[in-house]
Length: 330
Image (cartoon, rainbow, N blue to C red; front, side, top):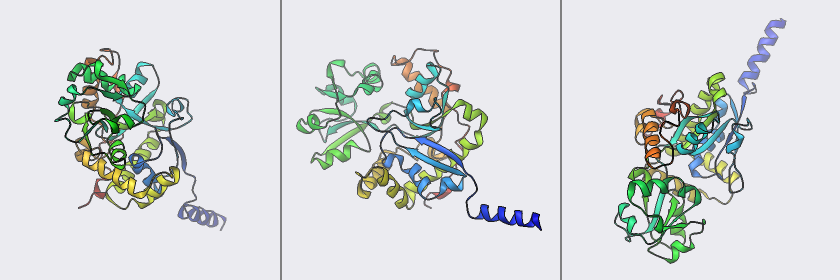
């Protein structure tokens, strides 16, 4: 009788969803936005819980640097910007590794006024190009070495669009899902050129984990990646109202209309669901492409040849499994 009672209590606990779940802290690289939508969707619609995860999303922001928190063990997964940061980690002996790449294309753009320049290559004729500090030490070096841009064109971008708005010849850096929206709202008629479509071949919105977690708890990593990927398919292609509500709760300055516009730009630019993701699923990693970006970084002088073991930069162990592709519209 006692055995039957214990079994009945256990069954009730499982059925009620009260069984202990693995707690996971996931840190993003900026304030909540549409570019984080799949993660918020998985949290809000119960996908993480279904995969046995109790996830806390910890926002980044202008005064927050979550990157040191991952190797310090304060967070479990980190949203990174692009592969260059992860390669720098390996170079410096930091034991983290990329386990998924959610943006097939880096959304970095050069923002112009419509009709002022014929193509990305034509931007070499622009009098002034505004680029922030991080960009100056990454993609700008590639633009100079590989595309013929000149340091004489460069001026620092201070994250204020007033110079761009006042001068139709002005070119400035931007994020493909953000600055075009801001420019339109300010009355401009923007045009933009995606660096990814012109040779800047890094992945973006990658997910990093600690090497010890990958080695000692791969099941947890797999569940987090699978649930996040399903969250992205639901956010992009199905009812994303729960995800949007969760994003706005963390970042009340946003609106549903703004988030929908951001998602539309993501689709227009082919940021997700294109390339290898069209065949292997969102989050896919092609190790040959990781090698290709490393070669680009070496040629641009961003890294030294032979300085990095690429097997320590990223792994395709947890992706390329077509998870969530059944959620695509028929």
